[in-house]
Length: 156
Image 1 (tube, helix red, strand yellow):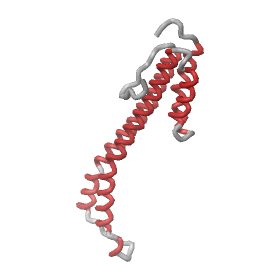
Image 2 (cartoon, helix red, strand yellow; image 1 turned 180 degrees about the vertical axis):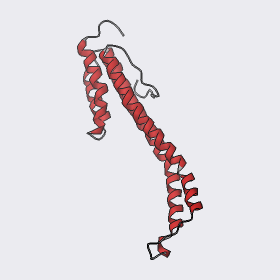
Image 3 (cartoon, helix red, strand yellow; image 1 turned 135 degrees about the vertical axis):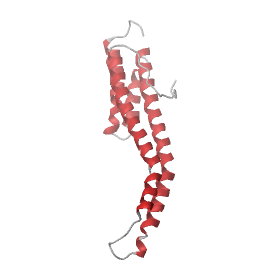
Image 4 (cartoon, helix red, strand yellow; image 1 turned 120 degrees about the vertical axis):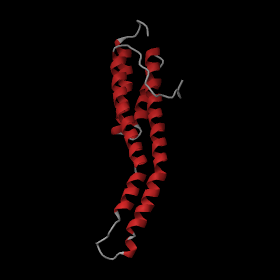
C-alpha cells in the first residue's frame, strides 16, 4: 500500500489472518476472533482495515460455498439411503445371510458419484482455505496487500 505501514500494523494484519485457524479450536472462531481484532484495530491503519475485511469476507465465502455443497448433496444421499434400505430389506430377513444383487449395488455406487464429487470439492475448499490464509498472513507480514481468490465482497 504505502510506506507508512509500521511493523505493528503488519503484525496485527498477519495475526488477523492467522486467527481464522481458531475455527479448529473454537466454534465460529474463524469469524469471532478476527472480527474482534479487526474492529478494535481498523481505525489505526488502512492496511489493517483492508486485511481484516479480506479475512472475514473469505471466511464467510468459504462457509457459503460449503453450505451450498452440503445442501446440494442431501438429495443424492437421501435417495441412495432409500435404495439401500429397499435393497437390503432387513425386515424380511431374520438371518445374517443377506444376498445383495451386484447390479443393484453398482446402481447405488453410480448414485453416490455426485456425493463423492461434492466431497472432493469440500476438501478442495478446505485446502484453498488453509493455503490462502497462510499466503495472506505471509504477505501481510511483508506489508503486501493480498486479495483472496473466490471471495464474495460482503463487508465493504
